[in-house]
Image 1 (cartoon, rainbow, N blue to C red):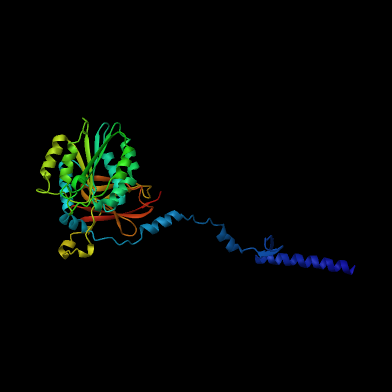
Image 2: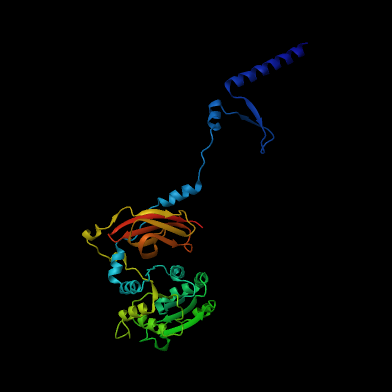
Amino acid sequence: MRTKLFVLLAIIATALGCNTDKQNGNQAKYTPDTKSDNKIQTEPKQDELANNDEPSEYVDSFKIKMDSLLTAKIKLPPVYYHDVMSAEDEATTKFTKLSAASNGKMKILVNSNMVANEIAASIKQVSVDKSDLLLLIDKTYSMTNDIANVKAGLSQIIDTIKKYKGVRLAIAFYGDKNVDGMEWYSFRNFETRYEEAQEYLNAVRVTGGGDIPESVYDAFFKSLQQDFWKSTKKCNIIIVGDAPPLEKPLSDYSIDDVIKEARARKIIMNFYPIIIMPAISEVKLSPTEAAKYQEIKLVTTLYPNPTKGHIDVGLEESGSYYMELYNSAGQMVITEQFFGLSWSKELGNLPDGMYILRIINSDHKFELVKFIIQK
């Protein structure tokens, strides 16, 4: 009888203890645990449960990364370097005149890795079915890396040519006819046998070239004398070089001779000089001149961002602009002059990362726009 009474009291005490715990909001709960056979955990209080019941905020890790990149501070060269380059660089001045007179388009590259990409872009701009295309390339020693990049990117160039029916291709190399002897010029017509161009490029030998200017005008006329030009649709010459043309008496022709002949034959010339920028530390600019450069709103759209390689840039007004592209280290990868209301570029061969586009107009106003390449 006494034993039954003790059992009954124990049951009552246990029941009372459980009720007390429930009132305090700390009910003991058994939870299995992989580290031990049994583990007692305490349930959270009601206010803690209320907080945990709220949905957690979604975190877009890519957006955080993108925002971080786009707000990064990147040091760029002074905005006025283009004025210095244009005033001092003879090649830029002459190539600009040549391309403008023949309805062509000059581009300035500071990254030789972009040469094949720019040649392909130019082919897209100028080619039509059953047209003639000549690549006229400076083969002097300073062009060694550039020629190597043309070789490496030849498949990209050929793929672009194949988009048009019956385009006939020829490649010519030139140096300085006064110092390079018989090797100063070479020419090969491939018709539509584009794959044969690789062997020709692999066999080319760079020459000394003497001083900086090269025989650009003479190479142009010598190319016209080849039995190649047959198209009644369009004739295109893309010249790739990094030096200004030789003038008379070291050249048999003048810039006016070239312009006259190009117009007579309806030949479109696109010039791609690879130019080494002057040292910014050596540039001196008065406070009055520096004050001309002001940052304003020039760009209406840049799309897409992020991009896999292609970008389209819309501008507030149609006009003349310098387009400068820098990587996240502040190094320039592209620069070119442009006229119009919209600008497009294929950048798929650039590494993934953040880039800054600096647009400068003819009134010395500029804007910086950041975007991300993510393939």
